[in-house]
Image 1: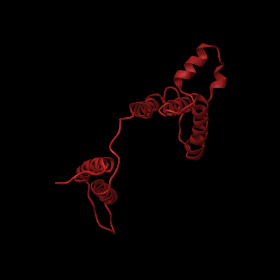
Image 2 (image 1 turned 180 degrees about the horizontal axis):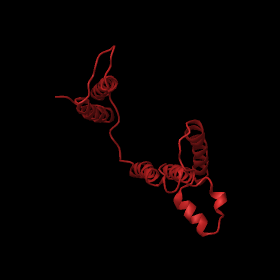
Image 3 (image 1 turned 120 degrees about the vertical axis):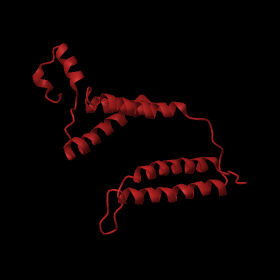
Image 4 (image 1 turned 90 degrees about the horizontal axis):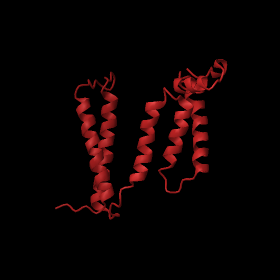
Length: 168
């Protein structure tokens, strides 16, 4: 009978094997091709195979080496990492890139037990700045810096429309 000595690694390996199984099912419909003429399933097959090797190695490590037991589930961190990402996806069009990303960064910082407003605001500022440089200036993605919801709000409080050129 197998005994699990390191439950964290063992269950991580099991989870990765489940991911491999899902990817393998997706590969069934793709043509693999050959080394000289790879098909659409060639590269995903290589990545799935590598993931399988890593998953088995992690699972075996969980059976062989001694590790800590699994502790309490960090629900706060899970919520404040998952919910802001969903928020960003749901509001980036309406609020715009900058406000959605700033709120997402601040909310994600709240997942840490050691977060402060100062560190959260600094994180948001740096993330928005570099994301603007990479995605809007560098890659030229056509994303509104501030969205239609904010444009309507600004117009309703009397901000002139000419100053809202960054809003779509």
